[in-house]
Length: 193
Image (cartoon, rainbow, N blue to C red; front, top):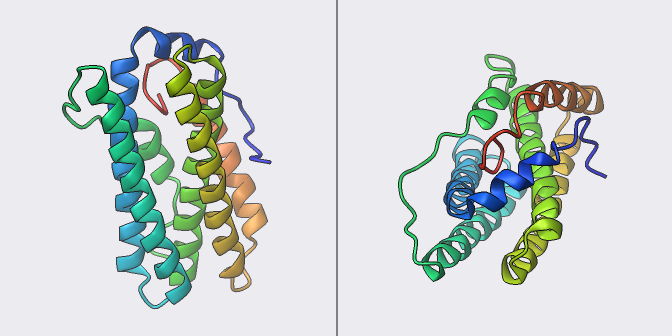
């Protein structure tokens, strides 16, 4: 369903299991950035009412996820700590076309969102199956379902607002580019690292 061209290296989950505090902190900031991305889409594309409505709901959901992750952090006696940079997301953002006509920028922003949600969905599935903490395993299973919905939301909007652009071709380009990025990742206990 997700179409990812390169699966996560299986050794990634072993790194995560050794440092749950780091993955939870990184995950919390990923949720914050996802909410910020939804708000940014509202600000930039406010004339697309359907997108604004969906992104309002998405931002609320992502903030709810942030709160849930924070509760898991607190329950273990940890603190959220400082924001982590997400090099994966930054590299993926560099692939978006800028300076083009508005709907091309919109399509790339939507495909960018779909790509992040697809990879997050895959990572949450792995965590739900491999984390030995039953509460966290269930939490990540629930988030996997949520991320799959977000993935289809973004991809669906990209297809709807294509205005003659070949979204399927561009999506394949995103998938191939992301696979190249992933060849260098899965070596840190971060959500996308």
